[in-house]
Length: 263
Image 1 (cartoon, rainbow, N blue to C red):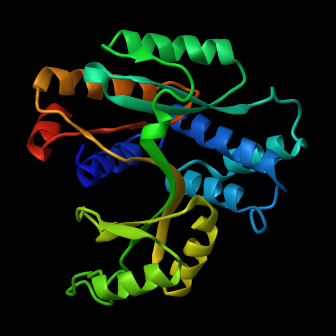
Image 2 (cartoon, rainbow, N blue to C red):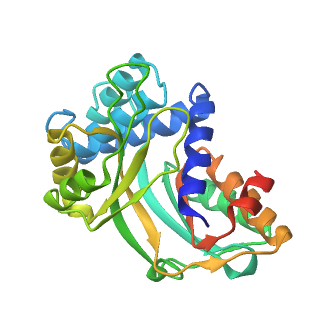
């Protein structure tokens, strides 16, 4: 799919969903598992700090964030054990799909995913059936600094961005379609270098909007048939709406005109 266009649509949808309970629950689960994986202190736990930043950006209330940290630290009552699981499968036309979930019940999650796949022309596969088609990368989303006055227009200096990205150990970057606010970019690096890249970009004065691990397809399937495209988008939306699902990645591309006409 057109990465920038799809990313733009996803960010807009996330903003629209910011106040919904499902979004808050997913963010809280990510905070809980991050707090359990390391120390429950965001200043020394990068995964936790990232999860908290994403929750704040999505509008999750402060008390919900603090409660999730306490649950992860084991200081807020009992909490069923959450585990991170990767599921893999295929969408219409053999498109490869990776789903990452946090769950306290594997059977429930697998059943929900299997239903979401099969009802929309896809099917779940075995672990490893499609992940070899992807590389996991650290991705930092940055925005240009706001202009000094309202009469000026925010600009992202690409030459300065390239220099900052290389200094931070990044592999490449991609400019994002300009939305209603500020121009931005996504900067890609190895997962182990994600924290260093974030610190480096912040030191250069960039506004870091998000830092995450993401599956990037090595090759993409071009989708030109409207019916197949519709089935794929419906399947991805159905998967993303499941409470246990944290992220969904697929390896298809489609023209912006086709994508926009279907969402």
